Amino acid sequence: QVQLVESGGGLVQPGGSLRLSCAASRTIFSINAMSWYRQAPGKERELVATVTSGGTTNYADSVKGRFTISRDNAKNTVSLQMNSLKPEDTAVYYCNVVVGRNYYPYWGQGTQVTVSS
Image 1: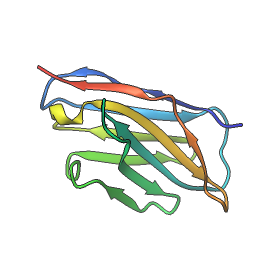
Image 2: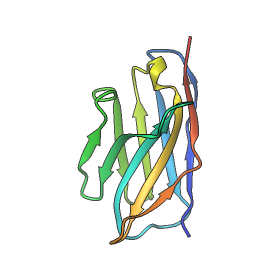
Image 3: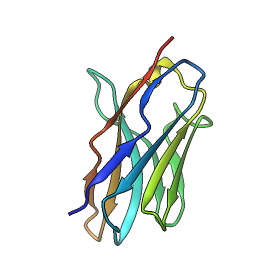
Image 4: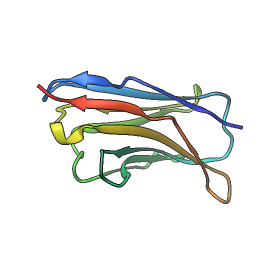
């Protein structure tokens, strides 16, 4: 059983920065990809950024150039550096890891990010 523990959320002003981190409760084997999703009230959960086990990254158009996803393989963590934050970035952010040949998903509990002046 894998648990993902997220941290780093909070309140920030527009233009500010936050760094979200997600740590696995134990070493995860056969990781296919690690991602960050977000869900704003009344909206569907959307993919924000992904990094594969090979290091390939992908970003939603809305965050390109502002967010950076990174993975520390040795520490079993994935982070999301968020710069130039906008009010529309306000959401609950979820860490996601897909594992194994069947891409079994694990989810973090979610961490609130609020961008407001």
